[in-house]
Image 1 (cartoon, rainbow, N blue to C red):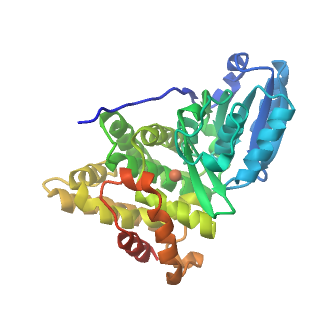
Image 2 (cartoon, rainbow, N blue to C red):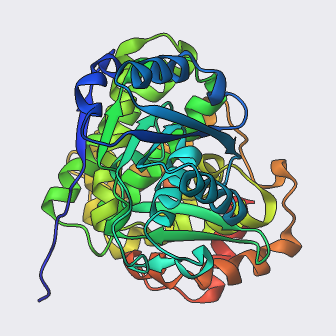
Image 3 (tube, rainbow, N blue to C red):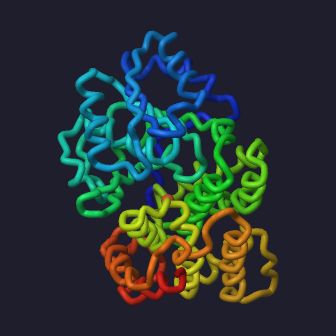
Length: 384
Ligand SMILES: [Fe+2]
């Protein structure tokens, strides 16, 4: 029997309005910050101005890098790294959704490592600890505020690289659910489905164990109880709070337990067809659960319970099917596309996508059921 490890070196401050407590933490980081945000919606959020004002009051200079696109590229993080280096930044602040947070991690790592970033894909390829990273999420889905993972796109090779290293954990994450109220319903739904996929995949992962499963299970409960509420009323602060919590704890779970096939397949879809990550997961997860059910029926039974299903007296496989049906029914009720075909994906692309997903041996190795290439083609076909 191998040993289990649970690592969590991130200091997290959580709660509505907690961004206002920022000042008391800033003095430890340095004298000059690179603020990393998206190039569209996030750069104009009130939180950006608030942050700049607080940095100034603490005597901290701020350089704003607002060029992060969704699914940030190697070129973008290299540009950010150059700016941070040339302007003498001591630390990096990522504010926004998963893209700016992931970019901030890699930009910070470029301050203490040579690169090239294209060789950092996989686990443990960043040699030195990044400069301090402050993560401030404004969505509730990726869990990047709680993970050692950054997903960066290699546009030349048309690949999404998962870069995993203990050297890119955020130093401090400020999780203020009130920053998520401006998310429109479709973004709330897709990011929520990303968090649900993290929770489900980490729960049944081969590397799952009690501490990670406790977090994953609770995240599933919170998402099922709150995602539709937040989609229909974005100002429902209780729902927003619970989704921020779910995203964060699902991140804590999967950074330790790993993910599975859904993510391997979603990365291929994102790299080749620019399908937003949460949408790709939403469209694939039920078919992956159907495939995996026979490998861990008792765990799917427990997931059905977390989703609020009554499984009293049912055999594990029958109960597990209720979890799959609950995910399918949830997708039908959310403001999201319902099939890959709706996004213009055609059946003649599925083998190429499956081949790409199959190459992701890291994610396939934590998936609970062994896979051959044809399995992945079939799962894509079912999701079409
Ligand atoms: Fe994800």
